[in-house]
Image (tube, rainbow, N blue to C red; front, side, top):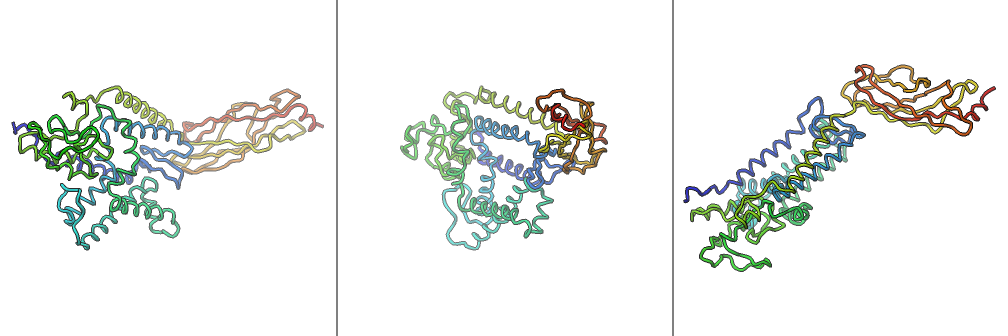
Length: 459
């Protein structure tokens, strides 16, 4: 019988550490990867640009942000409904930082703690040199972590330039030092209290749980009842002959958020599954499985498999797919040129004894492409011609330029005595050196004066 029992007491811990390593490498390396000069994700406030999936978008193209936010929130809902606080225990930077500081630096490297199996006791008394070294080592790692966070808003190449000239980049330096100091305080002083009392995710997770949400579950059927329905502890070791729980409380000692998983689902649980691993060697002595499994209430109560495919997960999955398709579609329709058209306060000018009517505009051209281009435009009304500018102009990559545009007509566009009339027109702007593949259309109006006004200018 014992041969069929999984006695790996570090099964979940090993998987978590591998996950931590993968996430850390990705987070540190990703800001340095560029394709055609663009990052995977960069919200660059300095240049007012968003890099997403190695494509650059101007701030005026931030119609993508709603899709990104929808994906973020739906992803959180889907993940929580399916796996509870799996993010907290397996991917959250707070958890990774605490494991590095508490388990690696304090316990393994400097022996400030006796064992990683007991997280309820603090560090050993004295040993001030080791404690100082632990803080200094974490301060260095906190600076690297803060820099990594900054790299998603200030690209690494710019980050280095800013560090070389801190006097002229005090805001940047303030953010960098502020984040570093917060991480030092958070990991050393706040500890898991951040997860329990500060993190908003812990407060909203319960409304997303259902009976099939997977989480660490202590089996009362096998181990016996420890707490009553009101959360009052009855005893450490259940008195029943068939109750397998030995009352060793290894699961309690190892919990980083200081809870007793035998009490049932609790707000503080972060799904790290260290309690499940702690129970493995104890039960293995009796040839039995761990009393704590990563399962669901429904599966535990009815001895069935967890239903991963259900209405809520399918609905979130469909919504996520649609939002992702929308993001990909909108991202693929990126405009390589932006154009804003503004009119001057003067509706029109009349010249040549009332024969010529001029309208003046301000065109703001923005070359969002990575190459320099020559631009010009056309008016869809053959009776309206361009006075200024008379020829195409060059605009460097990712630069903006204002152009005063004057349109005129010598034709009678509207014949009315009562009022000035706005004539709808469409401006077709394009890059002359790109085979007209870079084209945008903008709608505006050409104001034409009434006949009564024109008579005043005629001789």
